[in-house]
Structure formats: structure tokens, C-alpha cells
Length: 273
Image 1 (tube, rainbow, N blue to C red):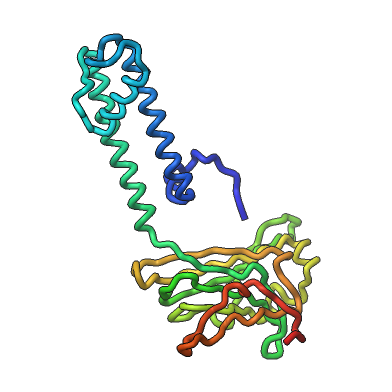
Image 2: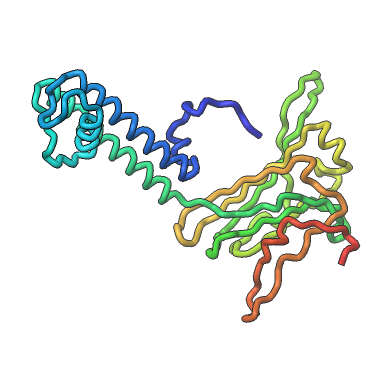
């Protein structure tokens, strides 16, 4: 699922969710733009800066950098009334910039995030004598997620009796939707009975109904003691019929269970060893 939106519609959210290199590049770009703007303003007053070369952009630029960061080395100084007014405005802008940048940086670092891996494919195969929709998740961190809950919702096009087409969301009941401790791998299963929206479905019917299966996992991070969330979705082409997942659990030298994530997305025929 997605929606069209302007990158400026929620700038704060964009700053929190952007990759680190984009975030830092954005801060650096803003820093250069602001100092370039103030350098141009200082140049409007020839002789307004003491010890600056007349008309030197770089002297004005580096003076702006010193003022914006409240460094004040003393080599360059405002001399005219106009320059002092600009210094007052820029110093205030610098304080605001440091506060906003520091707050956003802290929000990014302190915000707990989940490193949960969802299997790229999902499968429908027989389990305990019934066709069952299955996918698996793994905790990629070395810690544990406490009181983990998972919900699976099927979204599809629905034609009402009045002939209107609307989007319907139906929750798929799971064999196990809660685990008190999520540390390694978890295979999530929905038994397909007569009341299931997936009953009698195949890939063509799922494509026709524009089906999307949305997964939301939540739990408490044991290190942050805060709630974390992870989301994934499956389209019809992600679902494989009459397949099974490759085994990813093995015992280590100290008899501890280890998850082999290199095989996490592998599926195989039911009759394969």
C-alpha cells in the first residue's frame, strides 16, 4: 500500500526516517546554504567587517561560519551598524539551528527500532491436515522482544450489493498470534477453513481481487523497555502453493539453537528432503 505525498508535507517525519547519509547530507547542505546567504548579505556593506579583504566572498563566508557557530576567533569582527545587526540575527539563527539539529539527532538515536526480518515468500501448504497460510519472521538483533503480538490482515476489493467497489480489510485469525519471548524465528500460520477469506483462493483469484496481506508485529524491546513495531506485506506473486520453508534452525557447538539466515527465504517442494 502507498500514497502520493510531497516530501515537504511532513518534514519532521522525513528527517526521522531518512537514511543517515541523507540526514547528514541535508544538515551539511543547509549549513552551507545559510552561511552562503549571510556571506552575500555581509558583502552588501563594503568595509562592514574589520580585517576582511574588500569584496572577498570567502572572508565574509568564514566570518559567517564563525558567527553562526558562535566561535568568535577575533580575527574578523563586525564594524558597521549594518554588520552588527546581521551578526545579531545570524547568532540567533545559529542557536536555533543547533537546538533543532541536536533535538532531531537525539530523536533519531534514542528512537527504538525493530530489526525484524520477514520471509520474502509466503507459502500455502497442508499443516495438521488443513491448508495453511504461512510465513516466518526472525529477530535480527541479539536481544529479545518481549510480549510480541502479530496481526495479519487481508485487504481486497469488494463489490457491495449496490454495485459499489470498496476496499475491505479482514483480519486472519492465527494459530498463535502472541509469544511472550521472541528471540530467534517464528513461523506464523493461518489455518484456511470455510470461513477464511483465503478459502478456495488461487493466484488468479487473488490477483483479480487485488489482494494484499498486511503484517504488523509489535513487542517490547528488552533493552529500551519501549514498544517497537515492524510491518510487511505480501502480494499474490509472493505466495507459493504446496511449498515448504527450508529448515533454518540448527544446534551450535554449545547446544544453543542458531538461526541460519542465509536460508531464511528459501522454499522447497513438499516432497523434498
